[in-house]
Image 1 (cartoon, rainbow, N blue to C red):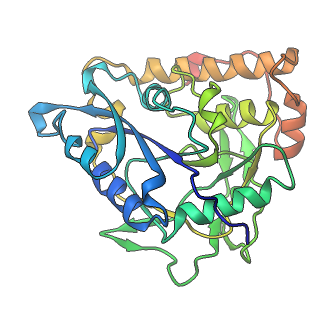
Image 2: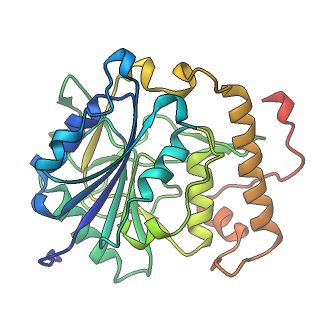
Image 3: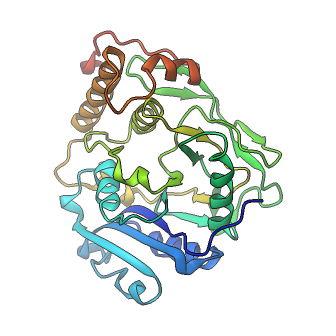
Length: 306
């Protein structure tokens, strides 16, 4: 097994929208880390004083860990991709990064496990990323604790006319403690070298739908390879209060219009990748289609049908 060096830091990037569980997520990450003093948290905290989700909710954690917080009243928020971009802006050259949801629990020694796996993958490819859809937890009861190598294997069944992926449901399999390639990046859990944070993989126009397609296509064509972890390293909460969804609570945002903008943004990326290979690209859109076993129909998007 590859060993962790003595000073490698992980920038943990979290966008939290009215989600009080972010505090538990941070504290659990610290508690379960093998090297907690090497964690650096960057939190985009979107709050609302009127419902007791206060601006200062996380301030006392500054005495417990290295944490950077950008605070925004929830009315300023423009959605999850916007918030993830704000969190990423707090990155300051840490060796590794983890982009994760605000409502997670961690496996013991998760940091050491991920660094060891990534170091091993680096012997096989230049830019590996570890990404997966974590299993769920309910009231701190975690799924698959007796089968920690059971992972969801994303299998794309079809591509919709809006360029969204349809997946095989309940596709959990044993990894045998090996890293398997993945056709996509799961935005709720991505781990890799810190340089990812310096590159722009968050488009503020992406609004829920299409986020994993956008990031997967952009990252793969720009030279990244995607892998599942060997074992479960994180769990996500199974129940989400409606208030933590931007589209259910934001007072002025029009979800339908934002979703249309998101799908147009995704189509623009795909058309750009199909027409030319830019200076940042190392692979073509066709390369991604062959890798993920998908086919995009880049005809005119009927946005009024969305």
